[in-house]
Image (cartoon, rainbow, N blue to C red; front, side, top):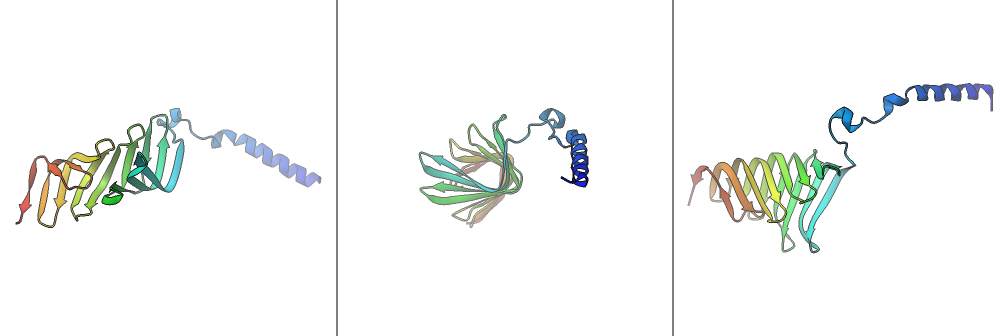
Amino acid sequence: MKTGHFIIIAIALLTLSSCEDKFKPASSDVIGKETPTHESWNSSVLFTDSSVTKAVLFAGHISVYTESAYTLIDSGAKVEFYKDEKIVSTLTGKRGKINDKTKDIEIFDSVMVVSSDSIRLNTSRLYWNNTTRKVSTEEFVKIKTPNEEIEGYGFESDQSLSNYRIFRVSGTFTK
């Protein structure tokens, strides 16, 4: 080995060893929150029961926090809900969170649900209960069907939006 190469390698090693502390990942104690154990981009997550698809989540970016048992969606969320192997409604929103133990989903920020029957729901936050297959919110909602527009606070429905209840309702109805 030439002397010049040895000196360059020695200087590089000294430089890297002096910078070692600057490039260590921040611990959760330093940044005040848990670091994700897994991340994925442009992903889909399948929700099944006895090999039957109940929902499919699509997201731009997903971060899994194993210790706290939740998954964050921070780059667009789309959930397709199924019944009898057919899509009954599609839920979209900018961000969301999945409870990894119950598989319940919370979507927030510009939430919209469109059913296969052309019923459209808009709200700021919506929950999907994996066990009951129902969606709900306590926030302001607006529902538009071919025959009516209804607004109110608080909402509960099956995931196809065919049987819904709005609490504290207001709106216009046409026959």
